Image (cartoon, rainbow, N blue to C red; front, side, top):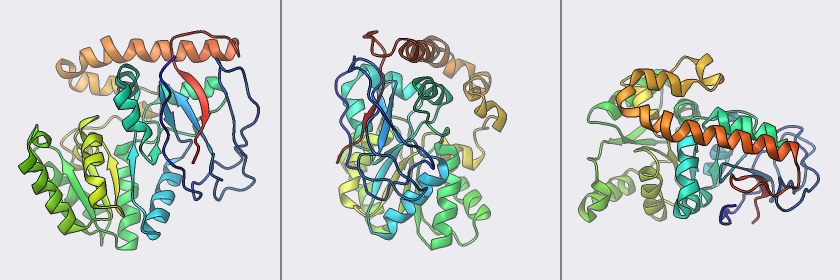
Length: 315
């Protein structure tokens, strides 16, 4: 089993999945469901369940609930960090306790990967849907535009963030993009470059910052910047800026819905992604699903190895 995974404080305004009433408790070695149910689709009490899949804790949120929660928090002047773990991130976190800590410290963590959703279903505590940074960059900027909230884009090669800005503003008239920045690789190790970025952000004072540098670089950067902008939400969005710009093609929706987006990206970039997807991620995903299936078939048994559980997120 993994080391205990730290959890972040839960805001009482977390929306619950409509009709989701956790109940029961299994043996300590198997899946455990604790917490209180909610009768309506509005908000959940502190202690709402997070689903532990692949060594990380995930919030059972839809994309719409993520947007609603972030907008409500911004109205209260409260910032936060959104992380979207996929199989590759879970595999890295399973090997590195510091990465589990990084994910666990985020206010929101949602599943960007159908294998994680499938594993949660096998556990009997299903995550409602896959929620990707590539989708959230559109829905969150749409919500920001309707409220006049400024956003900031960090990531991509030179020119990509600008192209993403233009695409987002074209989709959402009235969107305020307070700035874009394409930092060079390794900039975060330079105190001067980091101070320059910090200065730009503090001067711009955005409500939403999309950081597309890949995990864990983007999320470590977010952790370093958050104290300067406590009322800002930071979104670790991976390739979302490149997708929005159109510089990288995204898989058709049906492939994402069936867990095949990795195959589309593998075909598009075989030399860069073959080892990651075929040698590293695919075996991890298969072990994860097998473990979840065994936990379902043999509840309460100590099966060892792979981390599948449901734990209460506590204040």
